Image: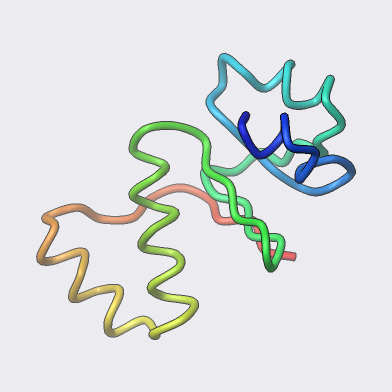
Length: 86
């Protein structure tokens, strides 16, 4: 919601915690039904554990699947749900 308040999500695909989706949409965000939304230079996530999914997605995107899988093992957390990518 800080990104939205700064105008960075206006007319862009995004997501946030389910309790704030209406506010995000009212501020001009284009809501996507996904745990993580990757619009290139703007990446958003839906909630607390979605933040872990966002971090793992960025590792996968920037450093590759093998690195992301090793990080999942280290964290004892498996990424889940949908990643929406432009």
